[in-house]
Length: 152
Length: 134
Image (cartoon, rainbow over all chains, first blue to last red; front, side):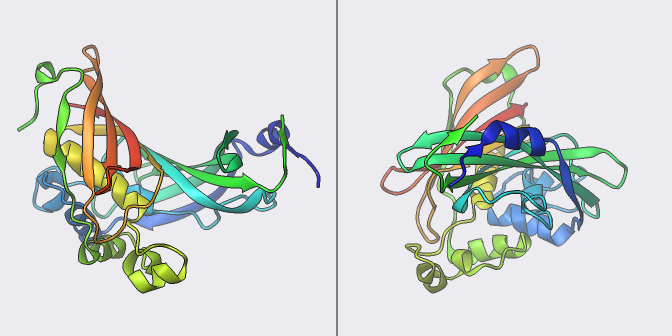
């Protein structure tokens, strides 16, 4: 089986924007989300609060139409969600229309008890209708490699 | 009331919280997040997928940690939240959310926190860090 060259893959795919999707932020969903996680700060649960806004990681629910770019090689068998990192820049408000743009932000390898794994960081950058960047979400997708070795 | 930066010290523990991850609550979360998947909302369907039971969505675990931070310091602003989902948190279990102050930056008046969710056996299921402005 052909050996994966991680550096070559990075050079070809990291930084390439491959999807754009739009999302509507609904007040009821904002309240239900915050209520379900036991939020006690009324900024997130009370639409009448003067600073009512979405819970900090609310944008993690928004996913692009494609997880990977068209033509991206299959790296391994299955995969799992390794975690999410959210950076908040501007509060998300009820009624906002967000545009999410997707790119591969990084590719790296780690070796653990279950063997070699490739971490693919799928980054979505969200802008509101005013063009302000409101948040960035890095989604770490972990794939166990089929190949015995990854070079690069 | 907002917590004063000067009152926060390295090593301070956030008050622990035992979040409600009952099926009813997880279903409410999943509906709000448009994630109507059986592995989150139905124990039998989750078992059919090889899981020990329905699991709490990772993004719900992350949001539970945000709520922990807000409970500790109402009015604070979470600027960054980075979580790793090490193992599933089971629906209808009794997990505990914990946090500890790991850094304070007087110049920017920001705090760094280490955050965890552990299960009843004390096993860590979710780990994370947050950067918070008071």
